[in-house]
Length: 159
Image (tube, rainbow, N blue to C red):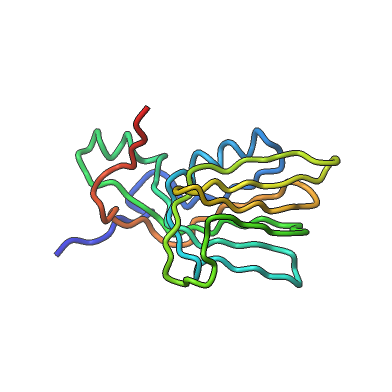
């Protein structure tokens, strides 16, 4: 019987990051590239003005070590939270289909009237979510231990 990887077995701990600048957001964007989630894993908290996504993110920070050690690639469940939300728009997504699986390709910041702007989530298949916010405040927190990537392969994007 095989067991899932544990944070205690590695040198890294669970990620807990905050982006407050466009440069900060690039780091989080790189870490959530190719994260997958269902529409059921999207939560809008109107009272606290937060949009939260529970994603299964590929552990890009562990890819080289996994290859060097000839061990399986890993994913981890993580919360991606956007705060100070003033509006949300989406395209190319059937929000009523609770089983629809989405793949996050990129996360970006489109500045508006300082400090406001939009966080843009670009999804595979021409889908997108635009989140208007008072300011840039995006958090990423790993919430489970890493587990073996089901596909057994690292995501790949041809040039």
